[in-house]
Length: 138
Length: 199
Image (tube, rainbow over all chains, first blue to last red; front, side):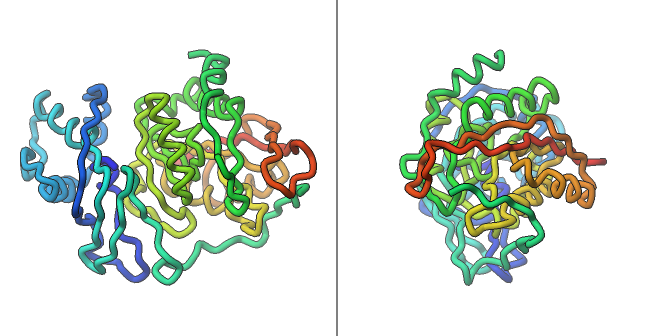
């Protein structure tokens, strides 16, 4: 899991509606996988990123080279550092903990597990009975 | 890359070891996957430099940036496939029918998916996937649905205020993967649909 994805993950335990983002990282194992630098794509992504959440998460895993606020003038060195942190740093193992309800979401082999058991999850999306699906030839 | 090259390069994508009947784990064939990705890229420019998500990715044949699935063993195969093909995909293990994915809205441009058809005691799951995909994608959703549901889907698209275009009617060859299949394979008529958000 890369930090760019972590920035999109939020606790979704039933009733946990506030202070449920960002999920705090613990016991992480990191790996760096280098990929091609694409400054255009990176810049297009910046407005979508929750910078405060990103900074606090980076701090949790020992990355302290980022400014508290997104600078107004962005140079190439800054983008390269950001590229390394957002796109090349992978969290391979560890867990994410909700600050509100303390639910733990494990990360294994680089994949965050957002599954909840039935009691924890919100009501299932309503299945629309009117859907006409043909019976398959089994 | 030409369509034929894409299709032939996708022949080496590994498939499910032990497909799970309840999850309707049929792999999208290289033939279909290549057509979906090629069309989205060359006719609509919805892939390159875009954030593309695959809902219910299975073995990952359609995965480009983000791939979600409820089955960790499928994600494990998808992860290997993407690494073999040198595609940087982020995987998330989650239940798309339960996870509201609130922060995903506006972070994903395009969704390309082959959702479960909803024929195995999970009637309507195809529409749950589609609705969620349309909530999240900022631009467009590409999806496969049984042709028999076309009228229903067109009506729904209108109700949801999205454009829906039938790009092709295809045969989905479901090979004999499960014990209860008597025939060697069954062809299902499938629509390749493109949905576009109206501004």
